[in-house]
Image 1 (spheres, helix red, strand yellow):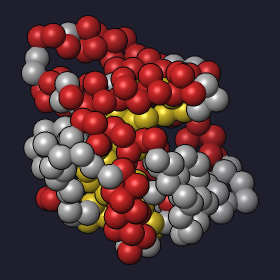
Image 2 (tube, helix red, strand yellow):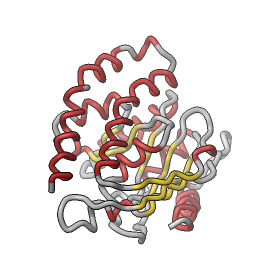
Image 3 (cartoon, helix red, strand yellow):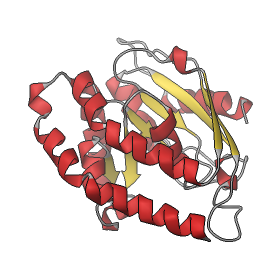
Image 4 (tube, rainbow, N blue to C red):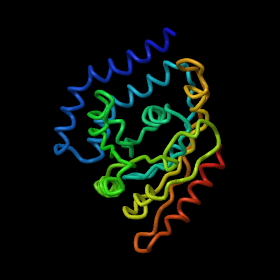
Length: 236
């Protein structure tokens, strides 16, 4: 009970306290290279996310981080639970933003942080807006920022993976940045299997070999999606 209360206090307290510095760093974007600015802007979110996981007592193992290439990538991950976002932000060194559902904008303070991290919001109820969000994501990747997508679209709450939504993979096929599959194993135990609040878990994050896409050829998005899904599933 006390741990859960402390978790929520830290969740909003840290975010509110560092909001001015996040805004200040965002305004300084033009003064640095893309890579330098992304590293700077992600320092506070990384500390915040890592601490949120640590408060639950969860142990995290990251495998394969040495495989990450330089430059922008599209991370494609399975989606087991609500803690997947802080797990990835807190325990993967490479800075990135997320393709996030637009409903997150209703949560106080979070949108300001996410916009600074170059996250892209998608309205799945409005096809025209959703298509524009994908275009915005492609532009973000081409500018040199990395992104994460959860192609299942919703939490699986276990080790069984849902169907991949095809639209998100246009981010890869149109931008031609390397695709890095990620397997998250055990995150659903922290919250989705807890009767109240949170519970400790052992989470493994596996970073797989990057998939380098041909620059001059048309890419079959369906085939790419099946390949990525099988790579992720093998480590569950």
